[in-house]
Amino acid sequence: MVLNLRHRTKVGMRPLQGLRHLIPFASPRHPSAPVSSDRSRCSVEPPNAPEREELLRLVRAFPWWYQRIYLGHGVFTRDAPGSNELLWDHLAPAIPDDLRGASVLDVGSNAGFFAIEMKRRNAGRVLGIETSDEHLRQAVLCNAVWGTDVEFRKLDAHDIESLGETFDIVLFTGILYHLRNPLSVLESVGSICRDAIVVETEVIVDDSRNRVYVHQGPHGNMRITEARRGLMKFIEGEELNGDPTNWWVPDRECVMGMLRTAGFRRFSRGLDLASTRFMIIAAKSDDGLLSLV
Ligand SMILES: C[S@@+](CC[C@H](N)C(=O)[O-])C[C@H]1O[C@@H](n2cnc3c(N)ncnc32)[C@H](O)[C@@H]1O
Image (cartoon, rainbow, N blue to C red; front, side, top):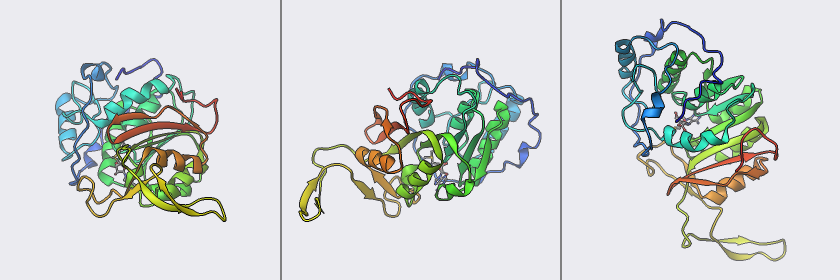
């Protein structure tokens, strides 16, 4: 990741007093995806990092971090590579260096990595919503260290319409498969997103042997036909990764079909980050902020 400071905005100098309330609690562990480079990820120092020892104490006070975020003095939130870094390596080229005040909603914002990066690219209002208190406390810490003024709020993605706001860009990474009602949430997102959505998700492996037989066809000519794409697997209990918060795994075509249903018309080339991880950017028009290449 190249940390581009040319467009950093609103880097406040708030001292880190008051961060001691970020007392963590246990959360489930997830394996991280492998990631490329490392050294470049700490080429820029955050403006509000406390002394290294204090930073280490604050980071270690949490039993576990999902996102790997640089916090200064050579300290990262975790040692192991974070899937957020791999994703950002691929996503960053699609995002302009200067977002010119565009508003951003980060759904399932975790420790705030993407929301903070968007703010550092000149986004205007940036809101991260998240259900985990622990991740929200992590995000408050990272936001303070980077001096960005992202708002992090406890809110379930299913209640997104209660925000009563619209956003230019919605980040929807690592969240789709965590939702009980993914289409319903995507439709809500579609109604509050003015420009583009970035979706990254677990997906069903594309395999020519995948098929279901369904009753479909035009009115008056329904028959049992074979469908090889547009599928979604229901996840029961802890079937996926031992994590009971996983509910549905779609295939790539299903992701795109739901996005079309939610009102998105233009698509980037889909990108496979791993055999079961897929990223795509969908926009409402051709002249949006994000590159659809
Ligand atoms: C796999 S992590 C992805 C985090 C981040 N978006 C990323 O790509 O690095 C999923 C995050 O979504 C949060 N989450 C899960 N279900 C949610 C829901 N219904 N509404 C909001 N956040 C949710 C989790 O607490 C977790 O922080």
